[in-house]
Image (cartoon, rainbow, N blue to C red; front, top):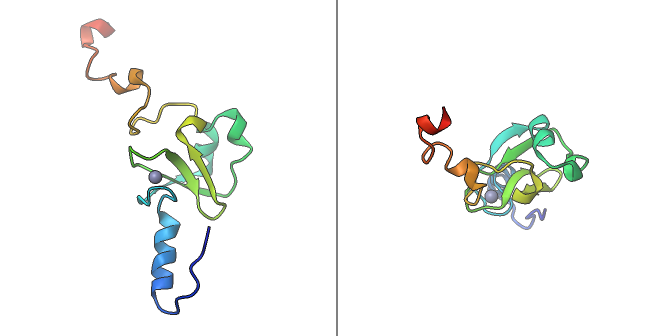
Length: 108
Ligand SMILES: [Zn+2]
């Protein structure tokens, strides 16, 4: 990740702080998740790529990024995780309509 270094004032720190927490793609502020969570949810192909101790999760439904670690410059996209992520726009419809379309009678 490119670090801005030509500035000499506080904006460096502010910029770094924001960069640390925000999604590298959409700049939405991420929610912290542990590495274990990420290891469990990425597909087998990507498990070995999980590095670093702490990840952020991007909650922006329009964004393809699910997990990211800015220190390691790692990000996992929607198609790199095993399960549809419920808050992402085009998650599997089975999950999306789970509660609204299926009545209790049908379930029983
Ligand atoms: Zn994002």
